[in-house]
Length: 364
Ligand code: MG
Image 1 (tube, rainbow, N blue to C red):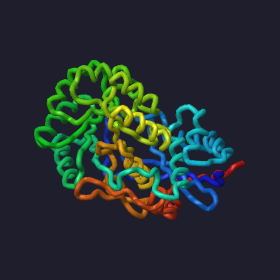
Image 2 (image 1 turned 135 degrees about the vertical axis):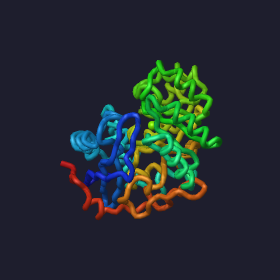
Image 3 (image 1 turned 120 degrees about the horizontal axis):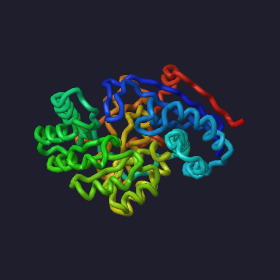
Image 4 (image 1 turned 180 degrees about the vertical axis):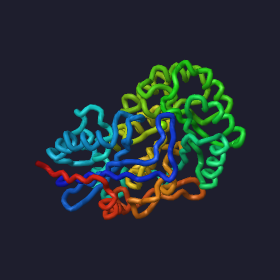
């Protein structure tokens, strides 16, 4: 199968609520949406790269550039026998994983005659992510609201100066709540004492406390604290996952297809973790509907044993780009679409209307 036409759309949507992490405070999400076409069939992908390079070095602008300059020209040359071929053809291109994933996931959608990835679960476990709030009281109120929405766990963003307070207040107000903390690389080994103070509050895990490119210091930290460490930013490949597990840097891994270069790579990370009995969960990047649909399918693979960041569409955006917004059931689960591919209707007319940039690229 040869790609005949690729369209890229830049869509910028306001968030219902500003989203603050240790890295940035965001009020909008800008995404590159990718529509691939071959032999009358269409597939869709969505980039997770942000407006600013605080989470990774990629942004929506670098994604556009990498796709146009070298990723799509490489793919136009290829005769693809399966979606996995995209990962193989692009393997020589270093980094640019979010850009690669944008088109790779669209090709998975294009190839899937039945349910994407054929995961084993018809429902996935959902969790809500809560950004840094203006006060501890506001945070407690937000947690209460999330629990009423049915979420099985909440993930709380932390930043230096607020971590112990957030953990202690949450445990005091919600004695039985499964909550986890996400530091987005805001700390160093000098902060061990802070993490020791968090231990008694028993979060289920702490995500990426140390540098975004580190494995070794995380292993050192894990030997000194009881809270399990979960890696996010540090894991870009299944080899990173293997090494992190082998040196004891992580007890759980957050998988984001965009961060690791696409669904083929995400499956490899999943498999490495499964073979070493390390549970995984599906991380979120405040996806619009297309990216969210891909995440729901990814999280239906069997080793996604922990509730992930995947939550209802309505939490983040007023505007929908798919026809069947994702909702959370009362038991904190979400149904995996059963129609072919990502299994949702992409609102193409709406996307064409709201896109701030549109590029159509064909084989030269
Ligand atoms: Mg994270």
